[in-house]
Length: 94
Image (cartoon, rainbow, N blue to C red):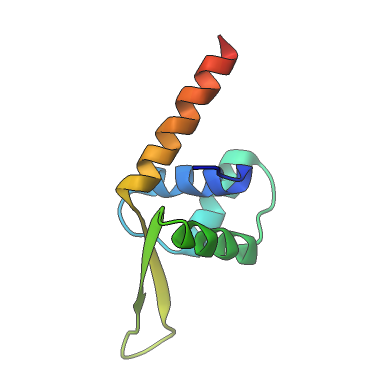
C-alpha cells in the first residue's frame, strides 16, 4: 500500500496514542514529535484518505451536550502498512 509521507506520520501518531483518537490529540502529538506546526485540517484530510484506503476506521460520537467528534482507529491493514514501510526503510538504510 502506497502511503504519502504525512499519512505515515498520522498512522504512527495514532499507534503511539493507542486505541481510538481524534484529530486534536494527533495534531499535538505530531507537533511535539516533529517540531513543526501541523494544521488540524491537514490531519483530518489525511485521516479521510486513510479511511478510504481501509487503513483506519471512524465513528461519530454525538454527545448530549457539546460538539460531535469523529474518532479514528487503525485497522489491521493500517498496522501492516506501517510495518511494510518500516521494513522498506530499514532495507534502504542497510
